[in-house]
Every structure is written in C-alpha cells, then in structure tokens.
Length: 191
Image (cartoon, rainbow, N blue to C red; front, top):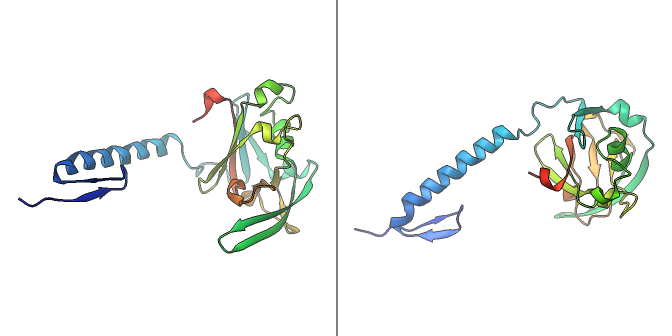
C-alpha cells in the first residue's frame, strides 16, 4: 500500500494517508460554518443603495443619505497612502465621522468613559470591513480627523460611493469606499 501525502491549507499541516479523512471532515465543517456565518451576517446586498445604515447605542438602524450628509459642516483632508504602485495622494471633503455618529444618535458625546472601549465597524457594499476605536475620533481623546467623504479631488461622490477616510494612516486599508453600513459597538457586542 502506498503512502498518500497532502497539505491542508485550513490547518497548515502536512498529513499522511491516515489523516486525510479527518482533514476532509474539518474542511467540510469549515465550509458549512462559513456558509452559516454568511447567512447570519449578510454582506450588505439588502441595504438600500442610496443611504448608509448607521447603528449605535439605540440599536435602531438609521438610514443616512447624501442630503443629510450635505447638511453637516465639511472639512478637507489630504491623504498620502502607500500602495504597491507607490504613494497615492488625494484630497477628500466631508463631515467628521464623529459629527455624523453624533447627529444620528449612534454615540453619546458626554459618556467619555464608554468611548475608550467602543469600536466602530465600517462596511463597504462589497463586504470589506475596517474597525476604528471611538477614542481615535472622539474630540476628548485623539480627535483624529476621520471623515465620511462626499467629495474626492473636488468631484462629488454619489450616494453609493461615499467613503470613510482615515487620513493619517500610512496605508489606506481602514479607508473604506462605497460605505453601506456603520456600526458602533460596545465590547460585549463585538462580533
């Protein structure tokens, strides 16, 4: 009987013929788990295309559109993100993310102690997610100028192409484009 060798990318382990069955079972279980997770946490396909859904301390979703965004004071930030093709520089305009979250009631600006343990998850229409600490954007702590951009290089972005921009990051991985959902979570609510 010949020996069968294989490599499992799930477990990152080489195995011999005796471990193939359990490895296949683990891979199948992983696939089923991912399918269940995908049905529990959809990637925003059902979200309205003309607004961003924002949830926070009340857990009641608020639909925030381009009209509401235009009514908030805007600032301009310059980004210079490192990419595989060099540095990408751009100018973005829009209200501070903090201002947006405060406007819809997703945060309570007077609860400073809670802010140090809260996070905000930004999800793009393609399912891409990035996480920020509320303490990073709170005026009482770091006051980072993170914005919900409605303009890029002087050109308006339409409602389904709004972007959260984190200007001082070296790479643009936390700047999420085509924002569909913004969730403010306490540590016990983190997924």
